[in-house]
Amino acid sequence: MLSHFDWITEPAGWIALLTLVALELVLGVDNVIFISILAGKLPHEDQQRARTTGIAMAVITRVLLLLSLSWVISLEEALFTVPYFNIGISGRDLILLMGGMFLLWKSTHEIHDKLEGKEGQASAKVAANFASVIVQIMLLDIVFSLDSVITAVGMVDELAIMIIAVIVAAGVMIFTAGPLGEFVEKHPTIKILALSFLLLIGFTLIVEGLHQHIPKGYVYFAMGFSVFVEMLNLRVRGTHVEPVNLRDAYKAETSALQPVAAESAFAGTAPAKKMSAKKESSSKTAAAKKAKPASKKK
Image 1 (cartoon, rainbow, N blue to C red):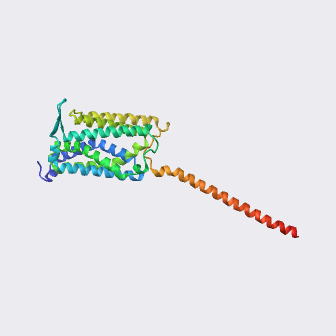
Image 2: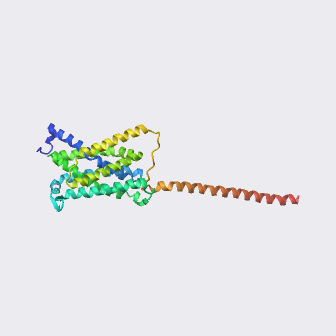
Image 3: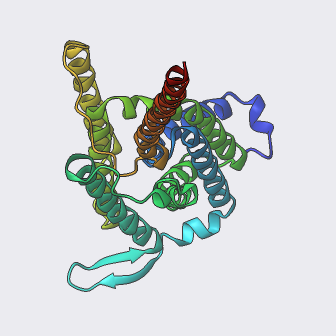
C-alpha cells in the first residue's frame, strides 16, 4: 500500500485515480437523475441550490463511509437468513432493498402525477418545501453511496485516492446536474424516460439486495441506447410538433396566483374607470342645473 501521498509520484496511482473517477461518474449518473427529478419540484430559483446541496451531501456521505471502512465491511455480514430461499440478508442488502422499493414507489407516483394527476394538486407548502426535498435526496444519497464506496474499496488500497476520486467526480456532477435538470424539464418525453430509468434502477437495487447480480454494463447500455433513440426522435421532430404539457402537481403557488392577480388588477382598473366616468357625468349634470336658473332670470 502506498503511504499517505507517495502515490503522486507513481504512475499506478494516477491510473487508479483516473479509473476510479470514471467509475464514480458512471455510478453517479442515477444519483444525478434522481436529484434533478426531485429538484424540479421546487421553484426555479431554488432548483440549482437543491442540486448543489444534494450532490454536496452525496460527497459528504461517501467520504464518511470511506472513513469508516470497517463499518462498511461489516455491512456485508448476514444479519438473518430467509428460510425458504436460504438467502442471508446483510445490512447492505436491507439498505438496497429499502432504497429500491422507495425508488419504485416514487417513480410510479411521479409518472402517475405527470400523466393523470391533477394540476397543482400538491399544496403550496409541499411544493415550496426545500427541506423535504433535501431529506429525500439525502436518504437516497446513502443508498447510491454504498455501491460507490464498495466499488472504491474493491479497486484501490489508498484512502486518499478514494476521497480525491469522489470529490473530483462530484465536481463534474455539480456542473452537469444543472443542464441535465433543465433539459429534462424542457422536454416532457425525456422526463418520463428519466422516471423510467429510476424504475429500472429501483428494480436493479432490489435484485442486488436479493444477491442476484446484474452487470452494471447491461443497465447503463439500456439507458444509453434509450437516450440515443430519444435524441434521434427529438432531432427528427424538431419544432414541427408542439410537446405535450405534463401535469405539474408541484406547481409553485406564485405561478397559480399570477392569473388571479392579473384578473384582480384588471378588475380593479375597470371600476376605477367607471367611478371616474360617473363623477364626470355628475359634475356635468350639476353644471347644467346651475346654468338653467341663470337663463330663467335673464
